[in-house]
Length: 217
Image (cartoon, rainbow, N blue to C red):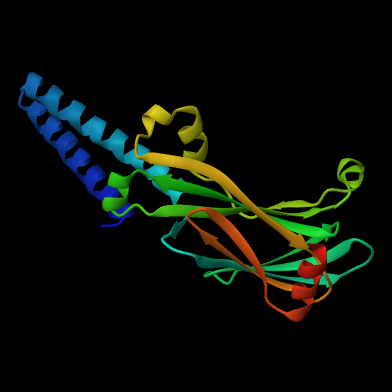
């Protein structure tokens, strides 16, 4: 059963109890009406809470094994300037960015659940967070133009922040952590990015990227 179906089911039960409360109130059964009304209100509140949590969770993708999450290609557009074309997997969504520097960096958020939550079907999940350009020189990092772009929105209740600030409220969360990978940019370089339970991995796909990555080491 999907999370949307669970929310709908809880909401329906809540509405039925509220309808029952109105019926009992009409019959002057005040105590029974109060009980049904309270239970119905609690179920509706629970459904609303579940909905906003589910809305945020939908921005993450399930992570069960190493899987491709993106492919990124670069075109030189001047000194320390590159146009990056990022294709997210499996959606195929294409995004283009102008990055400054010699290196690119991709960041992601990862949510891992407790063992008993895994048994209920909650796999670790990830969300690509941002892409940015990097300078090898610390002085340039401090002084020159920084190029950073968001890759996702954060609707609903922010599980990431809640799991850090109010961990006792979310006992099913085992760990939340950020993961980042960075490699050199080069004209025509193509990289594939995958993710595992331990974080992001980037690999050069073509000869240009392999040469750039080899010389970078």
